[in-house]
Image (cartoon, rainbow, N blue to C red; front, side):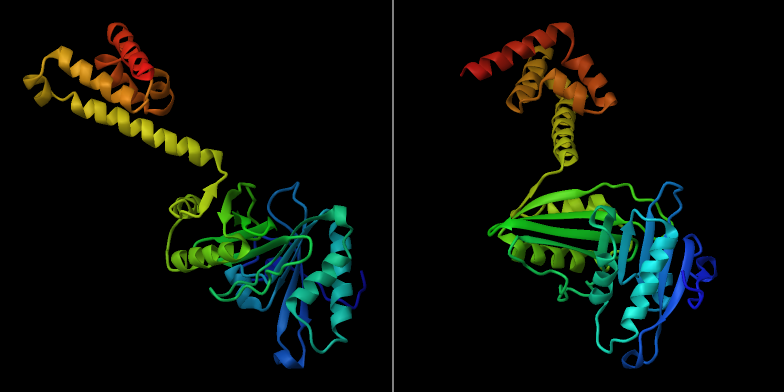
Length: 319
């Protein structure tokens, strides 16, 4: 590293106290009113983490955790700082350039096998999608949006005209570990429809104070042109279905009904409901809550009643 570059400890920067590393001021030039921007190089709070390069337009963006781009690489700290120094020297002699140009110049200096994560934050409102561009090999784009309580990375991928994949994950702040959990969806109508859905997500959640990834997931699954690829959602849906059926059976087995029906009638109707809703004992034990299942054992899943239930279900399948 050259001594002419004045690197400083990020502990001095408001908003970056938990980021372990150094920062370098970079003058964007006369067209930007000699605005001081910031390159940060360092690590998050995990000892085994990879080196990170972040670029912030100004100090306020650091406090808001709104980087213009973010690069994670499998190279040592000093090599990453050299890459930043090369980048600042290169653009000191160029009058007109974009953040994308800077990001691309940085990534060109990194061997392909050493690139881990490259993201440009370019969505500032529902109409701005300049990062998304098609090429001859298909479509693959990433972006980050800053909601009120978290940052979310969205990816759109497609190699077919009328099909696309929309993915999202929670994007970590500097100094915050990343859990690697992605939500993935197949979108009918291709890339254009995926973009419209993404705009709709941003518009819907931009004014929500407190939500998590599951809320976005549930919102997306209300849309008819989306097919989820999330196994956890299928399990959640089955759990909710079985729990609901079991609760209905228990609600039917109340004291009022037992006053006006015989036990045989109550048991028959309970088994009939479970049979018609295709809920077996194994399903109830697996997907219903422990309390619900224990209550069912007392009125439906006793050895005698269970045998009758199996007969009822067998008769139903034979019809």
